[in-house]
Image 1: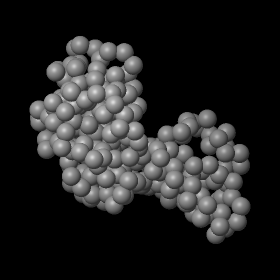
Image 2: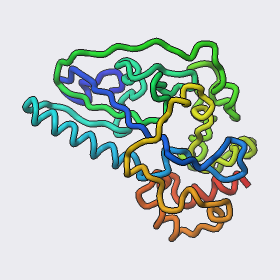
Image 3: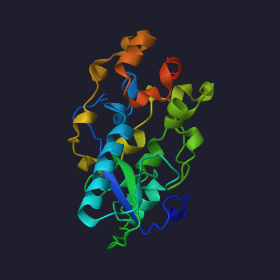
Image 4: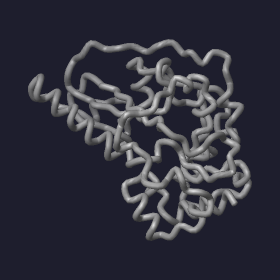
Length: 252
């Protein structure tokens, strides 16, 4: 299903690949050596699944209104679709050594989504890889998850430990977490191409009330009721209250 879009959308002829910038206007972390507990930039505001799904549905309706009935489906992490492969193939950027899609004009702080349709379109093409001899992302990864250029061991990634992992984080990685309690931006923060990142203009990605002002004590003393109130529409719901507390303990 990942390799053949027609198994997801019968009669599919085109993949429309899209990016949505989430780079914030203000930052939780000033640097990666900060002693403050940190969350990934993409989690500052409302859960991107809700935001992008709504935009994709509007876009799909627009296509139907302008062209006529078009068979298709919208995707944002909702099915076995190779987001990065399609984004690369459609020229939105190249796949960097940290395996993120990098745009030469906007860096890599964006979400990827698709609309797969049964329309034949004029297709864009892949662009050149501009990573060159740079290995900053590889050198900066504290867990050696990027074990060689363009290859990543997801089971060693801080994002995996703090979001996907259901069990306790292995003790040998505690000192390598770098105060990250949800996700990790190290390999993007260090990337020279992200000097071109511009603050997003999406109102729904505005940082949730007080999230950027929270200090370590606030995180450590947070109750489940407060967690549910602040993060009810946030990506932080993914690991849940207990998962977040586990991540905080692993960083202490």
